[in-house]
Amino acid sequence: MIPRLLAGIPSIADYEQLLRSTGFAEVERYSDGFLATHRSALSPYSRKWVSDPLHQWSRQWEYPFTLSRISTELEHKSSDQPVRILDAGSGVTFLPFLLTETFPNATVCCCDWDSSLTPIFDAINKVAPSRVEFVTADLHELPFEPAEFDLVYSVSVLEHTDRHPVIVDEFHRVLKPNGRLVLTVDLPAAPGEAHDTNDLLSALAKKFHDDSVDGDTDPLRDWATQDRLTTTYAAGLDRRLLPWRHPFLYRLSCLLSGHGWVQWPPAMTFTCMSMIRTG
Image 1 (cartoon, rainbow, N blue to C red):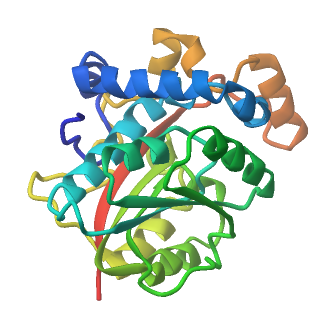
Image 2 (cartoon, rainbow, N blue to C red):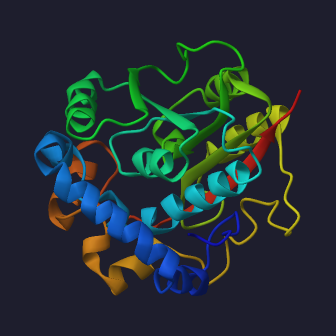
């Protein structure tokens, strides 16, 4: 479906190549069908965030990256071997449903602090029963047994949280030995402005190791390159790829919250990681 995508900060060239691929077209068709089938159930969540998660500037890479890394992992497992996956900070997207339809031996447990998502998942599963579960949970204190999951993934969540070492410890606790963590994190476009990034990477280094064989071991390797994917590039490509629909209101909100009259779009990039549990 999706070719193996490099970890780290994606380049514009790789991003454009992915968008032209048949694999991305397949994911896009699934996402479009999911949105059409469950439009009514998804309506409350769409008003909170966006109506089409895949067609957001970073998610067009992050979801395929996550899918490609999980697919590579599961292809090595027997089809009759049950696999349990955690979507940490899930929101409501097509991704866990695509995973369970692609891999009949997989169950995905979605967790999010937002309890209002429970009836949305219930409504989706009522229309089309799936092996996707939902649990209201705080990532700092996950309500799961030790070594309960074969894989954990989290897409652009940790930059919105605090106490990263605690969350990383929880991911380590609920993963089985040699379990895989797939993680994506937003970053400011300018290197050195992400004060929490080193804190997160240090915590990850203590609990996980990178098993890459293709040289993509440094998640910040391409932070300063001109070819990296950023919100500025995405805005030039199609402003609808950005989640901030109203520049003036965004700037006014930042001004009122003490951040001054900020740049629009916010200058951002992101990085993707795939690691193995240590110990």
